Length: 524
Image (cartoon, rainbow, N blue to C red; front, side):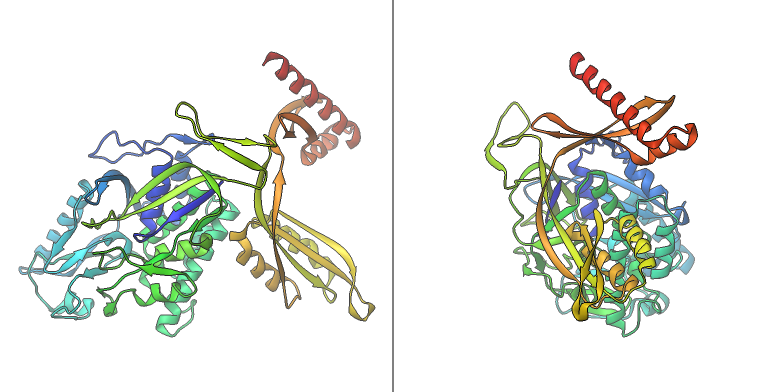
């Protein structure tokens, strides 16, 4: 499966997560509680998204996710709004008149009221508009390009009184750096792919912040990466992609907007410094007409940059699911949404597309059951490396999401024997695989090839043999079974426990699988 991210109106982490939730069918039963009520997709219940996020044990009790259906734009586009609410105390950054303790309590009350009801229009106070308050962690958006003041927010919070209508709040939970994020991910029950992809996203964000502040990623404690909503939005988006079996992600060009923002570093032009660093190398386009303020957030662009294979038009594919994720700001001339389109690649074996009003869209193919995708093959020649290390490297590559790893003996220059190490992976895993190769091997260069591959249909069954259960992989082509192969590890375990020769175990399991499949065909 592939996903195309239409970010032409902007992108934020919560918008991406909302679009993926919307694609699988979010239904709001109780508008007052914003309960999760999801359908299923490809047999995997989307409640696994919640369970996966709850496995971030170091964040236990710090957050809640609120999901609601909202309308965006003058055309009233129905979309899903995700809000990650921190349970840490909220204190005002810009305060109104009155006693300090009263102002703090008033700010808490206002925040709790926004949790109870999702606004459908922007909240504007004196030219300052809150477009993504939970996404930007205390950043407010200035619509007036020449605002009358630009004080540092921390100074404002402690020394200055303003009209109480201009009041914003900040999470005062623990500040986290990149090492903290890595520890949180490593201790979770998430898959290696989700952990690796999430860490890569946070590393991009950390590198951008470090560049802006002239320091290194291990020395900074910065608000964006450490904020609880940034963590949940990032990990939730990547986990949702995994649950939908999406490994190919493509994205549109990103809008380049204008305006200014107030943040902890003072008055900044849009795009913000960190966002602008992350936009390097990414195609941008003019913002939609009438759109001012921050359309692309640091969390949003770091996710897109980490996941997207390319930008612009997607490859030929058949859309099957569409989701719309809403931002907080509501523009007049265009809907503030991210659209995600999920479907199957229209591969080289596909012919004519036949739309049907009464059935799911199907493809007429010369070969019916095959699937195809595009993979990257990374290769390195090694002639000066301890061969004992190669086994460890292979294990690490596979555990971090490589599709396959293999070695070949080669003869290199100066007649030295060497090893050709090849790694096959999806395109969005290339950076991670390259990092492992450079860190764990002696290579100084990696070759990269992009290949199309055709894949037979696959399924797995369980059969009984020697009073034990064993898994069996089956391959299908043109509607027929072309391969039956017992799971080696299961057969090896049975052989050890029963003291039966391994070859006999494999033969018995294969025979049991053939009998099971024949019986299933007969009953069908």
